[in-house]
Length: 171
Image (tube, rainbow, N blue to C red; front, side, top):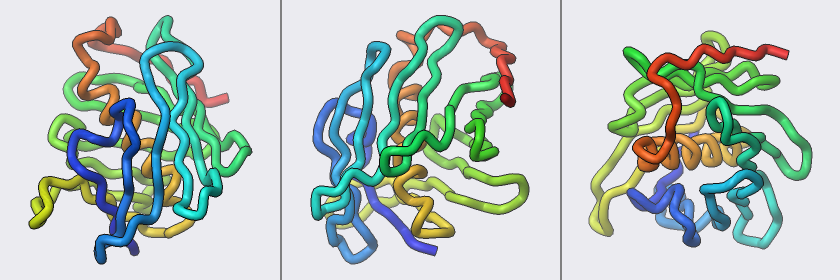
């Protein structure tokens, strides 16, 4: 299990975001923007290699995002419902995201297997999101998913989705 640290409130902004390890070493750089169909965030390793990206594909009937690892599409993320708690599903990967999204305390699972846990921490250099990822190879996708959840959280007032949103497409 590895921990990844991201400065609080920097994850989904249209700015460069650095992802670090527990020793403070920079591991990934996230760049891009959100807001309109086709916008994307790209995650690069510090040697400049694109390792993952997430692309906004729909605005009508709820926002959906396509996840790519390297250059291969691996899943589509969508919000299934948001009352009484949020629940997200990533098609093709069969991952679910649930927990306290509003306070950045949630988990990603593949059936009963943990993939990632999100929490917050205060360090000497500021407040951070902490991603505990079970397998290092899942870290780039987990970082992209965390960026989408951060985007949905801070842009919820702009999002016109209905309170109950049951659009589970398992194809």
